[in-house]
Image (cartoon, rainbow, N blue to C red):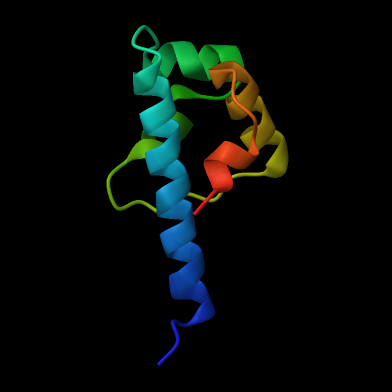
Length: 80
């Protein structure tokens, strides 16, 4: 049986947060606060986004700002 649309979305949002965390930590020198400052978002948003098991929805504008702050292409955060 196929996943319900909301379950599929939640899984994608969780994966997005895990990727933000991965790319931030891969830089080796960027804290959540530094990412938030560079992206122009609150550190609480970054914490919620990266939080284990959290499905945090963000706007495309925020997605692009985070990708720019991480110096990666936005699609890297959306790849499955």
